[in-house]
Image (cartoon, rainbow, N blue to C red; front, side):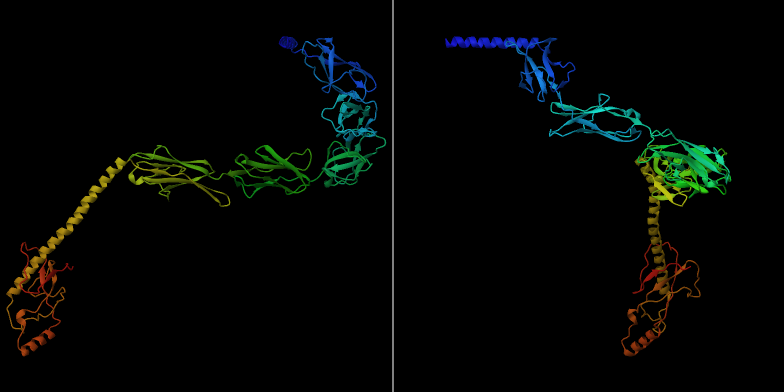
Length: 638
């Protein structure tokens, strides 16, 4: 039995769930809606009747009600302070599931009219500032009130403060204003207040008597005309000349000059105001001139000069030698006006700051000191801008660094900017300027041409650009390097052409000394042979007849020869070393002493020998018949 009831309950539960699901699908997108039936304008005021209904598919249906997400059964009756809140309704079908409606905020209007707008009662003057204050008395202790401001029943967006400011009032600010104060679901609404915006006077107009000009010493008068709109606010007048006030504000509407001078020429204006207010109105501007001395033709000069480096400043001085002030100065570039001013001085300055290339041109100035008179123009002066050299690049037209022997090569020195540059060329970091058979320059020296490239042209090339400032400053930039070479094969062939002749010359230089040495040895052998023959023919004498032979060396000088010998260019002299012969020694003391005396007496004797510096044609080496005889050839003495 227990199982049977459980099964039935489960089936009923699933059936109800299915029916609710079907109902939910059928009602998808068809939520009910809470509407205010009474009052008809939807504004619920405390103490008045109100009625809420649940609308579903254009029909009022029976529903369950919720207020602030809690069940609520009072949706009709007399509104009280607690009536306000978020209301929702939900269709009341036990067998079908329904969603709740969207929330409707119901705000009640408080019955106590304690909210007011405070403002100045008098009309608001055009241009004035006024502050409207939303006040409630007495202030309650509600937290976080929100304020709303309305102009002519239209909500002023974004204004949620207790004060609303009308800044610099315009005519469109004249309207009816009210404020609302909301705390929770209660709202207090003030009464409307009317703001009126008025002008304090008509537009002032300045008149001059006489109208436009006067002569020196004459009388002239200025009158400011304005109609006041506020009887309780008298108008105050101030007069201006060239933007400077001539008097303190006063109720006098005219300004008089009994005797006009040149100083009174200028532009005049009047200003109207009221006391205790910042409101002001200015009149029209009228020019008034006193006839004066015309200005002379102006002169124009430039300082520091007519040539200016880019980025520097220069001043144009426009001056006159005569003429009454104030003077109008106008500056032109070509025929375009660039500036003007009035001055009480005989000259004025126009400064060009950070001058650029676009400001280069012909300048002049013009002057005038009387309205309607034609301008006096100065002569043109030319201002030129010197641009420092920058961005120099060295390029090779061949677009390669290996150059064939005999090829023509052109190097270009390209400059990105610079006024009047001069070019300098460098080879192996040394400057060269003059053209030659190897190098040619273009007319402006920006190109270097090598008509026939050779190995001596190999190396590093570079160029530089230079220009000068008027003060003597020099601007200098150098380019990149380009290293030029010849191909390896051409270089080897050229080296071979140079090395072979050098090798031949070196061989000759090595062989020639060997040949000369052999020849000298032959001459020496011939001379030794002749000397041995001459010594063999000499008669052997006693020790008294024989020259002393105890000398180690004999000094030989040219010029001492035998009478029978002939001297010519083929004769040379030789050093002769003579030693004492072995048989020259004596055993007895007497002869030994005698021989020693002879040696001592002949110690400085010199023996001369002539050698013929010719080749005898013999192959035999000269012998040494006697011990100690050593011959050495001497170089020829010319």
